[in-house]
Amino acid sequence: MLKNIIGLVAGLLFGLGLLISGMTDPAKVQGFLDVFGAWDISLALVMGGGLMVAIVGVQLAKRQGSSWIGTPIEMPNNTTINKKLLIGAILFGVGWGLVGICPGPGIVLLGTGQWQAYVFIPAMVIGMLIYQWLEPKLA
Image (cartoon, rainbow, N blue to C red):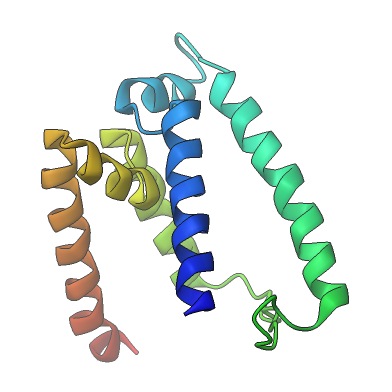
């Protein structure tokens, strides 16, 4: 039960942060990504602030060993940059640049009733399903 409450509170805080920072506004995100045009630096500051919070959180988690609910904290140990990672990053970046939405803000936009989310989220799910179907064939 506590795990679900912590997850709910964390998700609500994350979604609220995305809304307040403007990361759910596709036009603002595309302005941030347009570094050679009318660049909007404000989201870089939001990301930098988020990065600072994450660095502190990861350092605390490394020292703690277990979560607030007693489950072990397992840090990723794979640091290999491979072809799959690069292709995925490129596809993610292109999609983000085209529509100005990524998965987190897309889910938040569902809750706000914005039509873009009702196009983006199904397209994202279809992309994941295509990957699950193709991945064993490409391996």
